[in-house]
Length: 270
Image (cartoon, rainbow, N blue to C red):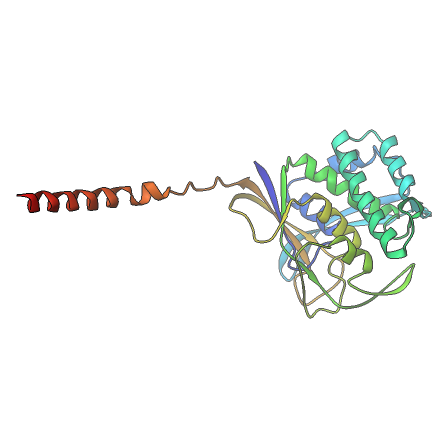
């Protein structure tokens, strides 16, 4: 089984996921051609090699070239349905956006159908999400594992105004998922990154026993004294070692004791 382990020691964001997937083997030309199947225009994708604390990584930048409007959940679902993307890519992308919609609806106490995305509805976030699903599908990843997620602190400015970190949508999306706080005054887990990993990962915790074949690093945008990268391990799930049964472990000893006691009995009888 082909699996991926997302090592989020510096958090996770949509562009970091795209960068790591490209670094691990997704061809840029393939990714761009697949994204053209979406009825979305007004963007340009730039991919370049960078170094983060002397670690080679891939940086992905989505530049908006046309004015974009805020989109509702139904608008985005409509874009996906109108596309010629593979059914599996459509399905997972819709699930990610629906989970985002639920989180936003909960925070603002409105119906999910009335949610209008702002930053997340922008073209760059759409490309991050759909592009990540395209990459994961292309690599044949059957199961995703993820490390616990770190939370930074401070505040972030967005269309809703100034919000605390982690952002309310991020926290809502990560309910039930292991997280921890670090002393870094920056946004480590974005709503887009949280939505992708919360929807697609099957398990959170330590790295499972696996045979690693490739490793990719995706760069974040915030400059930091720490390596601001997402590390993705790609490989095969290692077969679990079969533990010996209690009978197999102790059977010989039990037989030996039984024989000794039997001999003693025979001696007494004599």
